[in-house]
Length: 115
Ligand SMILES: [Zn+2]
Image (cartoon, rainbow, N blue to C red; front, top):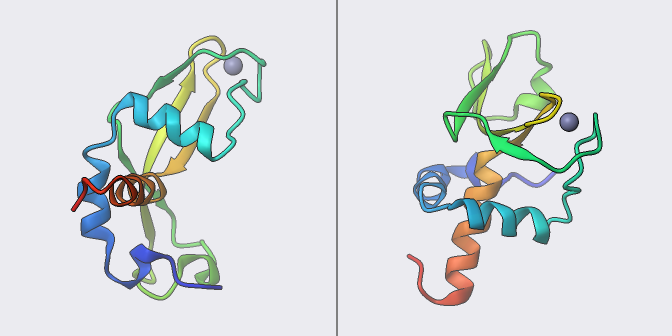
């Protein structure tokens, strides 16, 4: 398995890019990734971002080391996450915020206006 960009020390640049992600960007990200917009629970399409927009998801120490990767502490594993909630039934789904930040950084670089 290839190390992801944030596993090799680029996470601060990605997190700064994440701070520039707008709601419109998030919608564009979902479209580009082919994310289904219907709720997996009730089938409706009415989502809200659960505040804070980016939170830290901590997985307890029982997580297998194989999933945790080489750069995290052995006691736990934390990942920034964006959480969406269905406004109709409350079903929640989460995305790794670093994936979204990396996408934003790449989008800006392709457009020639990012750093
Ligand atoms: Zn729902």
